[in-house]
Image (cartoon, rainbow, N blue to C red):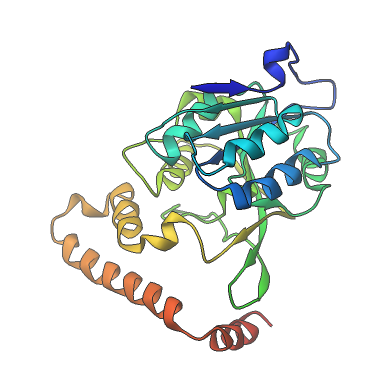
Amino acid sequence: MLIGGLRLNGITKKSQENMPLITVITVVYNAKDQLEETILSITGQTYKNIEYIIIDGASTDGTLDIIKKHEGLIDYWVSEQDNGLYDAMNKGIDLTSGNWINFMNSGDTFYDNKTIELLVSNIKYNDSISVFYGDAEVHFRSGINIIKAPLAIQGKMNFMKFRHQSSFTKTSCLKERHFDVKYKIAADFDLFRYLYINNGKFCYIPIVISKYYGIEGVSVDKPAAYEYEKCKINGFLDKKINYAFLFFIIIFAIGKYQLRKIFPTFLLKTYRDYKFK
């Protein structure tokens, strides 16, 4: 295990009057080409009371060189083997000192350098809220960038209605109930659903919080596994007959994924120009 950061030099941060400590956690594994942009997006924020933690899964591609290059801007980093994405995110939670946690993983960024400052102006007097969430800018391989608002959280929360990059969750909620690592793809949905059905309060803030690439991510690359986990979390598979419906859900998801891969870029651009104009 390798560790580093400001904490090792005795530098710690805490909340101040009217300046709650915001923790941003980046989970990374072998992503040296994407990580620096993420680091600069976080450390370049105008809001100054930010605790930044990086959890690296023992990368071997030069990712550690990027982390060490910016070590003076990172509160704590650790590089060791883990049991997947959500195990690494749980490690970050355990290391957190802030009031609120955001997960901004490698390759994702905040919308601009004033994002957290703007967000804190909305959240610092709302201690009863469990999760704040906002919009995201999605980048597609067709060259289209769109602002995507989350879906309204009403009635059942039966799928992920916002991006975890565009959410800030109260630290006490995450320390009480970590991500369930038996889910390899949809543990974030499982956690937010748990908070919702246990009377957690969700608050939408109409600002763009994050930027991410819509063509990447484990839920995109493994559509069958994602649909299975989502159905499992919703209790849909408690009845055996529903496995037949799951089969068709998976076939549709895989078909959609394959079409997106083979469609010419100009057709995808034309479609999204029409859809989001």
